[in-house]
Amino acid sequence: MTARVERLVTSGQFSLDGGTWDVDNNVWIVGDDHEAVVIDAAHDADAIAEAVGDRRLTAIVCTHAHNDHIDAAPALAERTGATIWLHPDDLQLWKQTHPDRDPDAWLADGLVIEAGGADLTVLHTPGHAPGAVCLYDPGLGTVFTGDTLFQGGPGATGRSFSHFPTIIDSIRDRLLALPPETKVLTGHGDPTTIGAEAPHLDEWIARGH
Image (tube, rainbow, N blue to C red; front, side, top):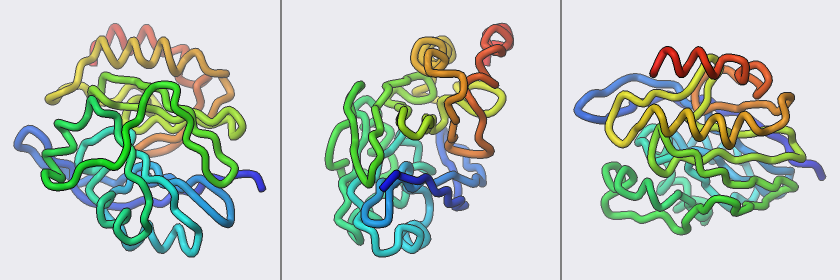
């Protein structure tokens, strides 16, 4: 059975550097009728578990460790037995939210996470956070970009652990090299495509943020 992608929007708060903001997050569920992966367990473990239903949840993949993308991960893992995956470069950020609970496994560039007919290849795309990753499934023609690339430009780089030249390099070298028709499913907001965003790279660089 071919994998499918479902979106759940959850609401909560993002906190960093002493500030707190209300946010809506995209939680992506990828799989078939029997098993699934959750990308970014944001805010509401109960709602995510309900959306997964009676499928076996094999993995909770964190695109990065800002609190709004990981706050529900331990509770969801405890309920489902799923493995929490994070890139090790984001462990310092993770510990700000979950000081007493480590991730279960480490993401690495090129690693493939398989579940329910999906094959998610990890692309390490630092910039928004040191351990930020995107997940590319060529069979689905889709890349899950977390907060690295949005409709209209790169993710924010104005706070701790972020770096604008690095996110530009990540987008240019890793994401814009994908086929232009590739769907971009983001950590917040509406989807886009690689082809829609690629022409604007020079504008983003000139804008400098």
